[in-house]
Length: 423
Image 1 (cartoon, helix red, strand yellow):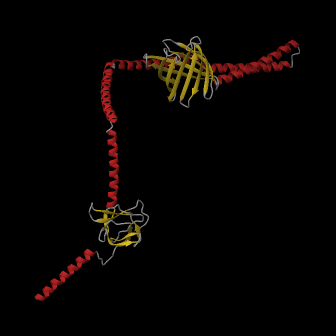
Image 2: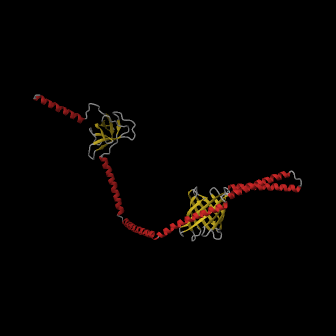
């Protein structure tokens, strides 16, 4: 190759490289040109052709042209081949840093329902310019200035200064008092450790006493009922009485047509009447026996003032859906007091009368829902006393009980709380 050929080859290579660089820098493509769309903004804040386009932060194309429209500014976007923008995407103009290059950022929608067609027009969100930021900053500074002036006016007041100083002093005194209270509580806990231990021991003894009382009540019920034999025998006796009365009535009816003596006929008629009355009473007694239901209740109560315990027990006998009788003993073993009351049961309120704590009195029981029940007893006509009880069901056949005795006498008023168990 001669010199002229070498110079020509080098010159041609340089021209080819120069053309390639021009094509690369200008973004001209000879294959697939990509995916064009048009974005419209009210103002673009310095956006110009050649700025990049990002999709969720990833570069996907460039701005090819920026044109002014009557209603804003249009930016032609050429996306890379294979990239499509979903319908409903949001377009904003951002910048890399405070003075960096502008770019268009495309944020995808939450749900994709198709893609924009080529050359589709999409309206972008207006960017906040530096002027608007300055105006907002000026407004914020003005409000801060007003706030500072108001605080100065308040703090500069002599009364406010004195109040703040007094508040600080009071806070210091409160902190000192809290420290002393904490130390006192710790000392009391150490000093009364023995009493706490004794209280726990008393609770254990109370639970044992409650268990023994329940055993004695079960034994008493078993001896009275004879394991169900007493009620069965009573039912058999009444049934036999009914059958006997029926037989007597039939025999008397048979003799009534045969006997001719007036005195004998009179006796037969009286026998028939007595047999019918006895049969009716037997039927009535059988109905009552079938309706009888019993419930045994045992409770243990504790007085927080005197630190004493007492246990109570009672048996509730229901002879019908409305009639009932309560037999029981209060304060077992210490100052045992008899309870013997009869009552009428209502849907919400029940009434009782009889002997309450060994004194004549009356009582009212009220249901306050499915679990809460309140009772008020008034007894002892010579020295009227009022007792208020509240019990709340926490489990099947188990109740939390609160009781206040002598609530009408301030000096003698006592309060108890404890547990009640039904069997």
